[in-house]
Image 1 (cartoon, each protein chain N blue to C red):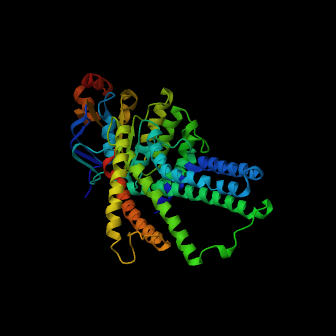
Image 2 (cartoon, helix red, strand yellow):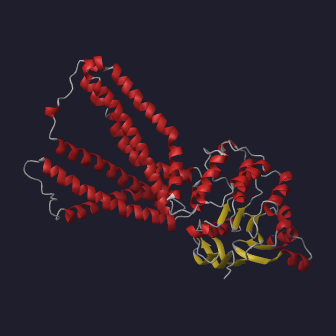
Image 3 (cartoon, rainbow over the protein chains, first blue to last red):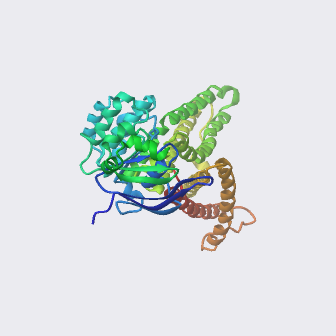
Length: 233
Length: 252
């Protein structure tokens, strides 16, 4: 039986003063590239973290490949947060070897290719990297793995505009694992639009629109960027 | 287990710089004491070589806390928790790495004290003769208990501080205050638990907490053994709770 990569049922995440997610239901089929679109504070990061098993929903049900988020799902998921969460005292190669100890699916040969592609040197300390280099390092770590589900939280943040198209091309093109599901949260809709199979618009923790990117474009006559402005403003 | 050792090695690598700094400090203290033998006398200077050991007990208790705290302070906690390892492995690797560092520093301090002692005749002092020592069996028993008890005490203290800190991370605001209150509460709870468990264990044959009129070595051994088991049980309980907290309740 094939489970969806992600299935959320009426997920609510409440903090003492706010509601980050308000009854979000969502099904992400395996092998799709899904855009999670919304402004800052719309709940994108919270949703990603719940799927990654880093946050617990207040109510609702979360399934990743048919399982509740935990150690087993973490083996199949690559979560790349927006900010740098790696150890600054490690070098890039030390980090890759460290990650490989937990994820045997990490391919060091692929990592070497990606390092060259992203213009990074293995001996460099993570703490000495610029914000843009740290953003590229996250992609090196994520794309080197044969993870079934990749969660990318604002992957273009910190990457200079001329390199973004190249990075996105790498993400869904030559370096993508066959059948891999990718969930990308972003508000850089214009650049990321061409790679989405499916999009989900979030506003104030609620899902306001969802559909196949192609169908939405045909039905509304708008690009995703235009829809982003229309639906979320 | 492979993942646990990977975590452990990561922790050890992270400890390296501070370990070397402390090693240098201990060596510096011993060199300073060696230069003071003539003015302070050999036995006073020798006694002071054990001073770092007292400091290291506190270091051993606080070190695992600092390892946990740094994950939040440096923002690496989400990465650590995104790895497919249990909360118990995460906490255990930190405890073990801190303990390894503690053992390393203690061995270094003791080796330097040993060198100091070996040089006694050169400084005009005499070695203690073997006939002045108690029987070998008692020495071994005494050393075992006097090493095992502080080690378990360190583990217990360390896990209390870790748990208290993590309880503070459960709330979004006033986490420092919650951690402080949790520390006080956990120490109170542990001391009450110790009383209860000690009473329970002292009913076992051969283990007595009834102090004789004159405290003898047998009572000391009996008391230390009971305390050893008490700390072992309490550590196991608190370690389980801490791992469960990391695994199920904390958010990153």
